Image (cartoon, rainbow, N blue to C red; front, side, top):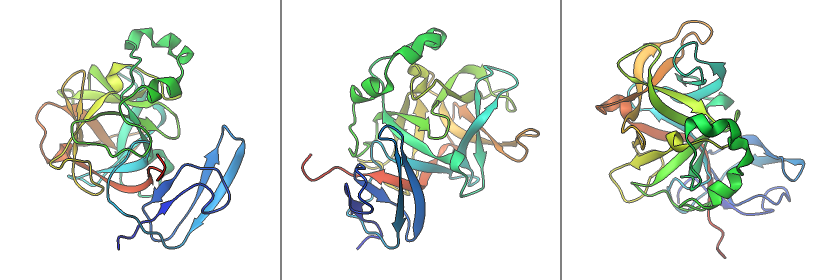
Length: 255
C-alpha cells in the first residue's frame, strides 16, 4: 500500500473541500477557503493513496534535478528586463512561496501588452474551458499553467534576457489572480504516459520553445543566495524537475 490516501468532502473536519491527496506521512496545514469565508484546519497523521499521478488543480513544489533548488517566487520585481515579479530557486524546504498550483492551458488568451485589462476576464472561466479538469491526470505532452499560490501570478517567460546569465531567457511571474497570457503556457515533457510524482520531467515554454532550467548562478541583494531560474535552448540535467512536497487533487468516484 502506497503512503497516500484519498480524502473527500467532510472526511477530515466537516469542511466542504474538494477531494485531495496529501503527500506527507505526518503533516499539519491550513486550507483557506476564501470564497466560502471560513478556514479549515486539517490534521493528518497517516494517509494512503491509490496512484502516483500528478493531477490538475494540485498544489506542488518542484525541485531541480541538478542543484536541488525548489522553484520559488515572491513579491520582488526584477531590476532589469521586464521588471515583472522574479522567479528563483531556493534550497529551503518549507517556504510557502515555493507552492505552485497546476491549472489547465487557458482557452481565453491575451497578449502580454493587452493584460492591463486582463482582470476583467474571470480566471475561473478561462480554467474551466481548459483541457484538464480538477483531479485529471496530467499526461505527457499536456499544456499547463503554474500559478504561484501566494501572489496568484503565473509562471511566465518571454524574449527578455535573463538577469544574470544573459544568453538565457528570463523567467518571471506574470498576471493577476491566475489571469495572464499565452506566455504562461508550458508543455509537460516526460518519458511515461502520465506525469508521475517524483519522476523527472521538463517544462517547455510553448511560445518560445525554451526549457525551464536552473542556471547555477546566484543573486545578491535583496534575494541573496537564491538561484537564477531561466529558459534555455538546450535542455541538460538543469532543465529536469520533479515534484516533491504537494497536495494532490483526486477525482470523486461519482465524477
